[in-house]
Length: 118
Image 1: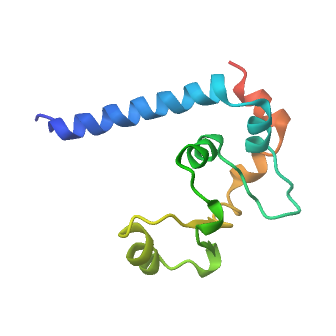
Image 2: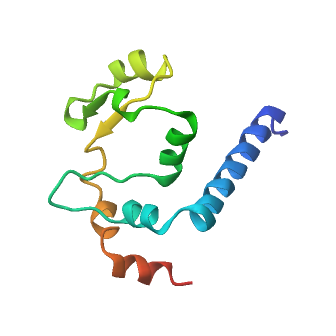
Image 3: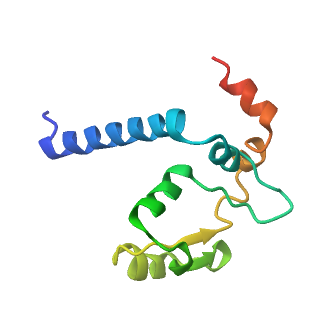
């Protein structure tokens, strides 16, 4: 069974995009950006800023204040599909990962250091 050529192109784009993101995180992200990416105050709303996305906003001159926000408890999948996904419009969903175990583990710098030792 042969793999369609278009699917191969998609896989190659995913691999190249992941590699470029890794290079950015490794060589170009500043220490402040990395610190902001890995730390946050658990007493406040969990907001993790992706340095790659942040640099994309700067590069494309996008205003983050104009992107609509919605809390996870008011999230409606039909509305999301009809108004945002099908229209290719950005949306910020707050508190989406608040219950994930990773949000607690990733705030612990000792845990991160221990698990990333090669």
